Image (cartoon, rainbow, N blue to C red; front, side):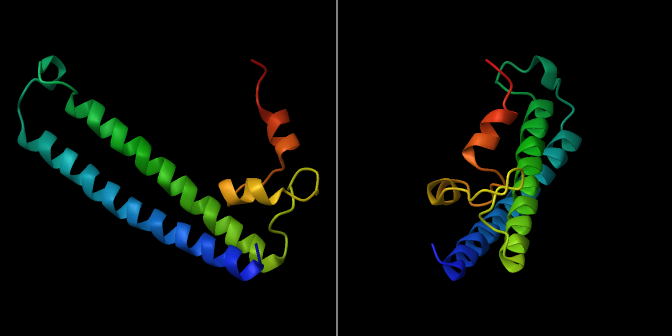
Length: 119
């Protein structure tokens, strides 16, 4: 992938992530508003998930999207610096297939595998 198409891919992913953050922010506000408007005992609601659970779930998704946005911003910075595609641990090139699947990745497969705890 050329550096121009890499940047464009990262910019598209960033724009998608920004849209997701906006939607999740709206969802979280709606859940918070619903909890204020309701005096129902949501801990014992036979209809399903509690408002607290929904709030935690949307908050977790929002946190994940914000981390993804920061990772994409970092990948764009690395593109500008000319270090995109190099493993930040060992300096070897990250395979193009890995970058295609995980465009904001910072490590090669070998270094990523070493970070994982044993099964």
